[in-house]
Length: 219
Length: 173
Image 1: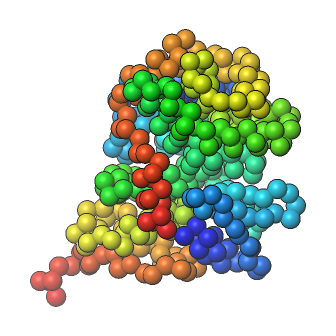
Image 2: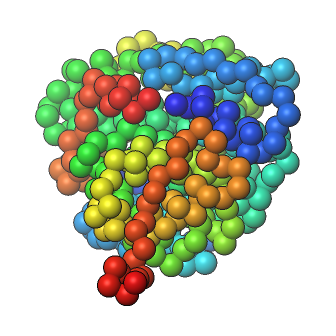
């Protein structure tokens, strides 16, 4: 089993954190952002996990699921729900936010893009009244969401409003040794700027408005 | 669209009592009211719940590896295929055609929820292809044709005629 990652790639933070948390044995290889590891995908996609069967996983959430399951922790329905929300709602908003903050120098506008998802997360956390997203212990949902939000929430220059519950939860997850170590590997202490070379290679994200229109058309 | 997919999935699974769904937000995300706990939100989350309810765990994959591969294609369907542009369509068909080159099903050697969902998701795209375009992604159309004729899956969707006879050309007849 082999995990392919690249430095400064925000998606790799998820899988490296999951690897540290679960302690699963796996070779980790650092490659260039442009390396086409998954043979059937026309765009280079990282991270990628080469499974013992020879198949590749190219979705960071699926890789996290596999690592947690290999460690005996199958994803619960509540976790599934958070992972789906991460993929459909949080991730597109975050990529747009990173694009603005890292490439366009529009850090002040990031809050507008992330406001919706952050408020939703904040309300869920304060309503749930547990230290972590799905209960008393860290789950796959905490690791995946923490890693997604890490680049923006650990940057003090981005004003991200008053989401008290999100901040308390974020600091709680960030305090674990595994998350710290993964964040250091990916961001190398350079914060948002550490992602510049990765972001430059990505297509500009579609604006929310055009996503919504397409959704309406396809429905 | 999401609610029709869930209702077709319920029929395929043979669930006796149809569930009641509502939707939330601008994107009309499906919500399932759950008697034993908080409501479930999200198309894939609800679909996986239905599969468990119907006691058909093999549809989610028989091993940890297959389960991860199934989840990956479910995510691919809702994030890449569901709201894709014309330009994305080309990449999706090209990539899938290469992936399916040596496969009958997406995630294992039997049908899984990933096949059913991608079939629902890609149906409008395949409907719009010309015969020539269909021939350019022949592995996708072969897989698609197989799934649309798989007993009990098609339900709300019309059959798409995907292939001309490629083996015998007109002059052999």
